[in-house]
Image (tube, rainbow, N blue to C red; front, side, top):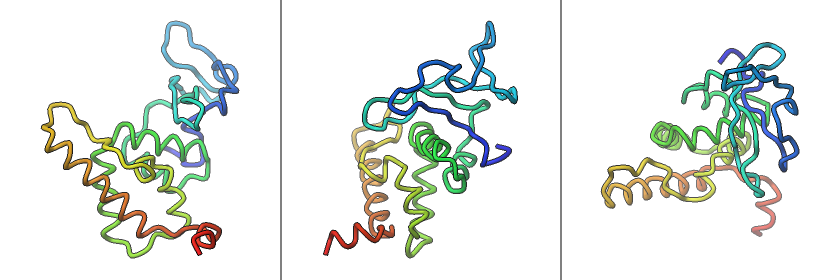
Length: 171
């Protein structure tokens, strides 16, 4: 990753964009990627779901690894980069994500609002599910993974800083 202020994910909003040219991308004959005006390669992908189905979009190539995605989620100001990083962390790096969150939550007494907002993009911290790989695992191992994710969500809920209006609603 060269620059966190460059786009790494493009997505439609409510399916407003339907083809690569809508994103400023051009086809490369015989290839399974598209090029932008700077000759960056992009692969089409259905991305995050905003409530009306997964959005049609693109991922910049080469795909980012766990550390790059984590840094992008933590540092970028580009909304699609934050959403894409959180989506791919959930989707492709469940083990690494679980370990990173454990480390973060054990070393932190309170999570500030900015970090709370970014971490809230991780679906696993909103809805407890087991996003760990379950292939060739016993039911006990799957249950253990689920309990670990559940504990992480609980820790996040304890550590996060809610926004002012949510705190007032609770009173």
